[in-house]
Image 1 (tube, helix red, strand yellow):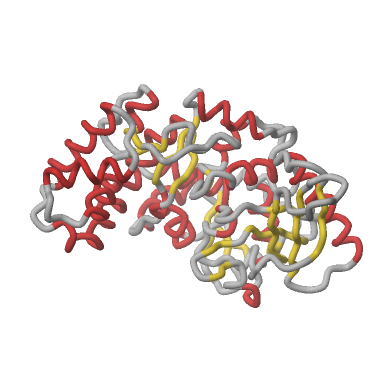
Image 2: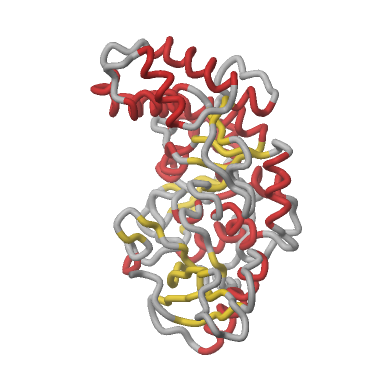
Amino acid sequence: MTTKPMTPRALGRATLERQLLLARAPMGVEDAVAHLVGLQAQEVRPPYVTLAARLSGFTPGALSTALEERRVARLVTMRSTIHLHTADDCMTLRPLVQPARERELRTFRNGLVGVDLARLAALAREYVEAEPRTPKELRALLLKEWPDADPQSLSTAARCLLPLVQVTPRGLWRRSGAVRLTTAGHWLGRPAPDAAPAPDATVLRYLRAFGPASVRDFQQWAGLTRTKEVFERLRPQLTTFRDEHGVELFDLPDAPRPDEDVPAPPRLLAEFDNLLLSHADRTRVVREADRGRTWQGNIAHATFLVDGMVAGLWALKEGALKEGDAAQGSRLVLEPFRDLVPAQRDALVAEAEHMAAVLEAPGAVTVDFGTVRR
């Protein structure tokens, strides 16, 4: 076991390599989703952008097909947010974070006075397995049993107590529909696990995708607490480092750790990309001066990387050219946080053009520098 220092830049390069952001990987959709241990999927488009930034030869249709064939699905897991997971991970990661989802119910206890949570879970399961239900429909059914309860608290309790997946067409490329819910086991045709898995394997997968990382980093990603003992149990098979503040970082001995000066090409990331949300200390990819610049109220903007760091915002505005132009096309706007040298601008524009092509932006695409935030 070693304890070596690592600079933020070295940590960034290691994480970018594992996130498939130093070079696009010739990997299939399921393999990529499994390797990344899920993709943020609060909205429909982000998983498509996430894979377009990371995979060579990716097409949106490949992810849509995987959703339709139920090889991947969308449900609440880490940090109480919608993630897209493989079918296998739907059945294991949700039980792992279930204690956190149940603790979340404390926030809604005032709206659940007199509600038998075990009965609520049983009824909600019966309703959504009879047919997929919208959250509004599920609330209405549960209100018949508990008319004095807060409607939002009832549907939130169902989401916390049960592994509810968003069934297709929700999430399909350009064919998405309203959110309708059923249980993961019912949708995927798989039995529920007898017990939640030990977190050890998930810690190792997290390090493979996001390391080197501290205990707090893992807890930030998973939304779990009290996992230090897991790292201690795994310590004999891990190597350790220290960041610039002396925080202990764990890693897999055979995981890639490129030189910190390895070139990092520009990449366009989705809103809520897990690269930006999965460490307690995010300075490996976000400068302190840029913290908070990717948010406006409760809106998260899509970001882009230059030299491995968040360097600005972007937005694709489809059909955004004025009426009367030669072709009704699309506009991809780049808003850098600071001046870029000509070579960086050229490389960023080329990457933006690639992203627009993969996302099948209609018409001629104009890439220019402007303002994303309003």
